[in-house]
Length: 91
Image (cartoon, rainbow, N blue to C red; front, side, top):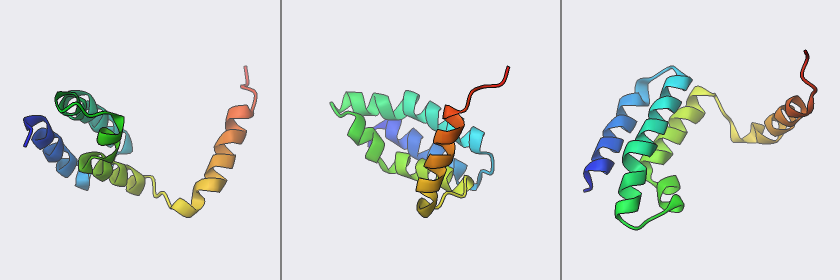
């Protein structure tokens, strides 16, 4: 297996007990930039490969868990965030 994928897999396993969302997101960004994208590029793969890689999915699951995301909430969350984005900023 590609050494980049091995390092990415180790990082994904190390964050499974984490409780800090921003820390997990930061590590995921580092894994993407330093391991998964280089592995993807060396194999002639692209975005879909990175998005669907088991490491990406495990990170996404951890992030979802920390945010206590329930898929059924998506529509209400989308509406709430859209309303927030459309609100004028206070000076």
